[in-house]
Each structure stands twice: as C-alpha cells, then as structure tokens.
Image 1: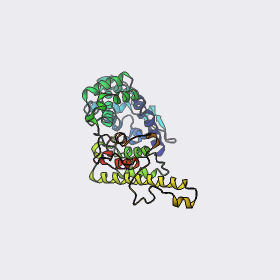
Image 2: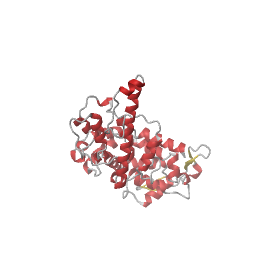
Image 3: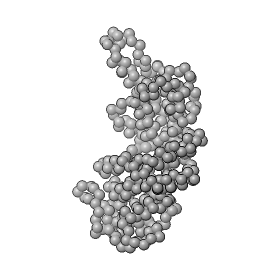
Amino acid sequence: YAPAMLHQNELFRREAAGNFARLLHEIARDPAMLIYLDGATNRRGQPNENFARELLELFTLGEGNYSEQDIKQAARAFTGHSLDRQSGQYRFYPGLHDDGEKYVFGHNGNFDADQIVDMLLQNPRTAEFIVGKLWREFVSPTPDAAEIKRLAASFRAGKYEIKPLLREMFLSAAFRDPKNRGVLFKSPVELIVGTIRLLQIPVENKRKLVAASRTLGQDLFSPPNVKGWPGGEAWISTYTLGLRQQILQRIVQATQVAIYDRQMKMAADKQQMMETPIEGRSLRDAPMAVKVPDSFGAIDVASLQRVMLPIAPLEPVEAGMPMGQAMAQLMLDPVYQLK
C-alpha cells in the first residue's frame, strides 16, 4: 500500500536523527505498521500479539528482557488502534479497545498504548538496546558493555534525542580505535548510493539503482521480515561479492561516459572535436578512471586512499598514478566493500 509506505518512510527520515521516544509513540499508530503486524485487527476479546511481541523484542527491550505475560497484557493495551476504511489513515475505535485492568512489567493498571510505550522508555534496558544497535551499525559488531551503559545513560538523560547520541558516539575513542576500522560491511544501499554520491554522478533513471540493490539482496521497502535484513557479513558471499564488483565497474564506466560526453560538448565543431584528444574515447581500451569531484580539492593519492578506504587496499596504489585512475582502482578494491 504505497501511501502507507510513503508515510512510514517520511516518519523514519524525520526521526532518524530526531527523537526515539517520539518515533516509538508514532510507530504504534503508523498505518503501514498496523497492517504489517496485524495491529489493525487487534481488538478487545481477540487480542493480536504480533505488534506487542516485536515492540518488546525488536524495538525496545530485546529478547530475554520480558515475559510472555508482558506481551499478552501489552497487546490488550493496543486494541482498538486501526485504520479508517475510507482514507487508510490511523483511527482509534474506542468500542474495540480493552479498557480493563492489565498487569504489565510488574505494574497493575488500566494501561493504554501510550502508557505502555512510556513504561518501555522508562526502562534503562531500552536505551541500552538502541545504543547497542547503533554501535553495531557504526562502530563494530561487538559492543563494548561499559561504553554502551555510559552512552545509554546519556541517551536517557537527553530524553532520547538521537543526534546528540550519535555525536557522542562518533567522537568517542572507541569509534576511532584502529581495531574498529574496517570491521563493518557496506549494505547494498550504502555501497551503491554512497558511490553515486561520492562521484557526484547525476542519475536520471533511479530504477536501475533500485534494481541493482535488489540484485545484491536489499530490496527497498521489502525486508525479509520485521527485523529487517541481517546485515554484517550476511551481505558478503562469493556470489554477491562478484556482483558488487560488476556494479562498481559499471558505475566507473558510466563516469567515463559522462566525462567523454562533457568533452564532446566542449568541442566547437566537428573538425575540432576530431583533433581534440579525448580521454576515455575508447572506453573498452582506456584504463578505468573517474573524475575526481571538485569538492576533494587538491588531494594527493595517499589522502584519497584515506578518504575512500577504512584500511589499506589489497593492491597498493602507485604514488604517481593519475588521480582518476587511482580513484577507480580504490573503488574496485575489495576493501572498498568495508565501511
């Protein structure tokens, strides 16, 4: 249902570096989530536990930090949250809501959905769980327990504002520790979109990028389950690594074509065009090279390598190599698959 997916994507974009508490409250009313996890059919007398289970397991506390009783009782609190049949927008139906007393997380009360979410946010484990996920995304696959607790305490004290948490994490010694360099793998989207942005290539038909990501295992808006893609080493196999290299080669070749086209337009007439040496005119025979973005300034090969790769490349780049050729070689090095 495209409108619901658009609305959800806008929510994620708005709160990705916004406020996690606000995100958690809004996702409980999100039409796409209500459809995906059967919240729209959750009603008094027939509670559906899908959303409550994933809320506790995947979004806040993590497995092992709640009971089956907590799931069952929390599901009752989310009854009556559904969709308007005409507009497809969120709608609360009081007649379908279970307003009886519930026993959740050791507390009794006539809890509603917002109160359940607030109770989760008051639990220190929620902040630790989210910080752990961010750590595995940006620092390393193995969270540092002491650092997680420190950052989580700061996260809670900051009322779940995400941007200050990210700033604190990125400025930490652990983030810059050499042992944490090159230990994470780029997802297909990070690889493809990141490369396009790095090279500043205008892409008119973005469907090709979507198709390339799908080929590499990340079909946008269609994760394998509510947990999402497993990520990490799961992105890399003998099969996908070869496909990744092919896609990068095509991007490099497309850059050469763009350079060729720009130089063609610079020729004043046909005669001058024939006399003007054009780098990459024979794309099949010319060495692969790309146009180094103007934003890189007067950068040398060593600095370029540090910008593009987290660790040293498998194939060293010669010091005197032309910058465009060096950039292409670094991009096609297997180390470029790391972040």
